[in-house]
Length: 217
Image (cartoon, rainbow, N blue to C red; front, side, top):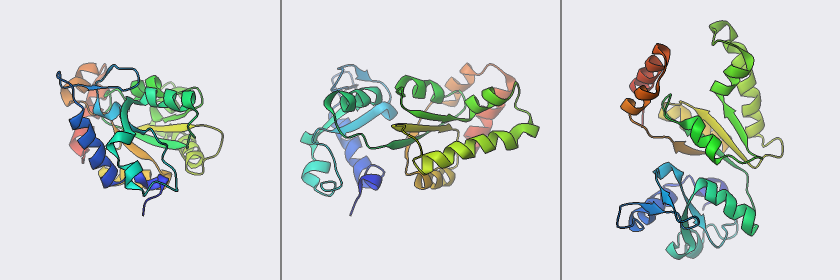
């Protein structure tokens, strides 16, 4: 039996979503957003939206939750607009956005987050507390991170969606965090060549190499 809290993380939903994505490729091999009618360039930017809203009472009714005719494929940003425009109940959601340094995680979150969304980004914390990333300040940085992480876990505040941004190369670490936060995982999938081309310092290049070395899909 599924709940709204675990349905979207289930193998059944993920397999079903990918089948629909494959079925709805156009002649150019693109998935077209069924809200704005523009291509969805990246798979991680594709949301399967239930036209008839999914609730605790119908999540186990496959005629609703896993019905092709009840699903449209849309951008994350368009999904937010649908909820705001048509008055769907907005259940608080948490996303863990992970990937290599310079993959574009923070950029993707900025492009998709709304004015009432909470963003926890370690890079931004460093920028707020220091002009460097001195090891002597790591305890302070992690203290700020843990405080906000606890607020997300306990759903403190009036935010709508929370985005937790980080590398998380280890599969087991990120899945454990996802379980703790009740979060969905979004992998910003870029090649090492693309990430290295965006790096501006030797340290960034080293962090990228280390991430790909440690990455467990």
